[in-house]
Length: 527
Image (cartoon, rainbow, N blue to C red; front, side, top):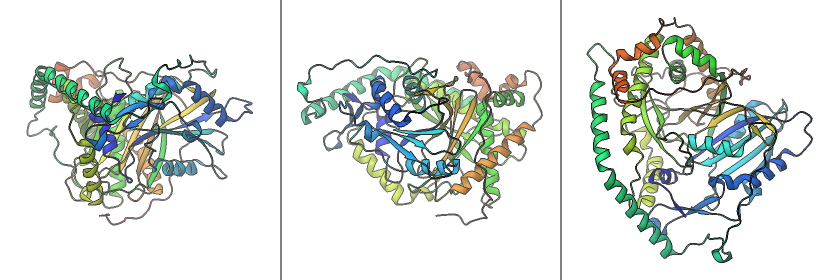
């Protein structure tokens, strides 16, 4: 038995039929030359031998009586692989457009909470002979970094399929498998867990006070003069993305070479993350402007920030969120690029100081039914389209494996992330680095961003990259000196270690992305 933290459990409580809370990946695989086997059966057999290496594959939920406390994870000793691993075939001709639409549909359905919270689909029939693998797992049990840990367990670094040590035979339990837990046992476990968490909170108070004081000093140092752009952000302007959503999805992908983006960021005074944020800023501005929907105020992005410490491979959620100024009200790209960089560094500087307290588990009696009710009310009442917006878009940058990986002997060519849109944030742009490239996954509510419009946004991302490439290079050493001119970076330099950037890896040739169809005309804002 393993208790969910309050953060892990929140992904269960905030889930509604319109907002499935699972994260996924879409892999494009090159089969071994001359392969004549049944890849679906081979993959399923491999998973069966290895799933004991990652608990996310073999555990499921046991709710507390009357939902008085957070549920617990318990072992499932009878995982039905035929249910969890499925086979699909695209209709001819098997284009990437067809694959995108299939993934969007698969991503819209809820996972079965009576089983381990994961599903994998082997998708054949692509016109270029590749095989696609779509795999989704509930966010309550895994975040982006923990997903990378699962990747290291389940995949290989060479075409040779490695053998793993079989699971140890479990003893005891009287043959029941340990699944059915008694009411008294569950309540006792909930009380013991709550007591332990409150004890930890008490022990943490001195550290929390110090962290909050330091973070306050960082925020104070971020105050700008009258002529400087403010680093503290107010509410976000309303856009078409700040609305209640349905469970229908649109999905599109883009692949870019990592080393080229890294060199570009250094040349113009930023990082790979700054380049990604600036691309999203320009793409969103162009997309909204051509429809007459770009607000005069700057758009704001909500950006997840990992709280995970070095070497922590726990398969749970350790993440916070910062808001980043996308500076869409600044027409000059060079100025906008620097404003985005400054805002991002300012937000991360505060999170670094609050890290000891942000991930603290906060037990709250009755939270499951209360949070679930609030989530349902928020979606069905359309409050998302009426309340002030904190952010306009979700943008995430997840570091992934730096070397090529193999799945049951097939080389992984692309590793596209498929994340979560939500009420009030109908668009999610997630980027994952993999083996010399950056793979973009754009997921959205199809009612707000159609499949054709998703491709149009991909086209704007490409145009935005060209605009950044056209920027003049900064002077030698300016990439390091420029941030020091703003209070946020001065504070970050004094109070935190330098930010680690993704490792340089070999540049891969980007695959062809789906061609963007003709742009749709302007439309009225949805309510």
